[in-house]
Image 1: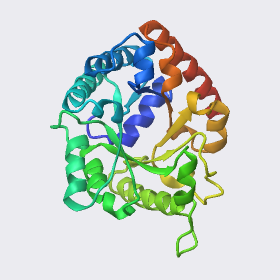
Image 2: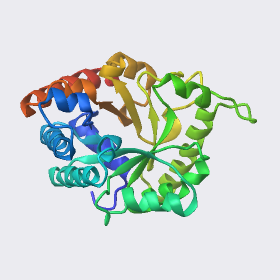
Image 3: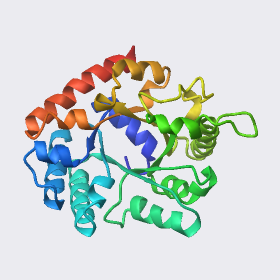
Length: 288
């Protein structure tokens, strides 16, 4: 799909394969349960097995960058190997890095995660808007011009996020609603310019969000971006939560599954079966 933006590619891919996004999370406990060493080699091996299981059964995967960075440069090198294997397998990649900064530093993060010349290049990266949404401009611009994407934290599944995300601005709207509206404006500009139906700016909205989107004044239907939904499985979310939180926007939802998926390992076949199970359940819920 040369020349097609990330949002359109992701929607097409999930429509064809399913909305489940396996997490690549080499957590110490998971490595132990898999009989792998808690070191860069173990993290790389876990990542490669998830990629093998996801190839052909999922459209997109989400490496949790922190679990690789904790080993230093060797861990980052292991992540680069996993990302390269994802590209070889034809999988889209959302790097869960939650980056944020201002000016040239934000541009540096864009170069690291969204420039195809970088060994860390992903199809999209998670970002934080809490230095001000406008500070994300270098990342949003890089995504829009390069056919990549960003997922902006909006309504997260952790209870601690409520105090910030539900806070009311001087305009009388919640912070989460301001973030969603800014993303919608960027996507509207992009879709007008390109004719694509989906823009490059997605939102992170937990399947078990601490604040209900409607209560926060967040209109997910009109954002024109993809919606990354963490929280399934170990965090307590289920397919019914997807149907409730994302009513009317289900075709743009990417349902991230991390720890509960990985408990099926280390056998690739068992991981693949767990992905199939989640795909069947989430598709049914989102189509209801």
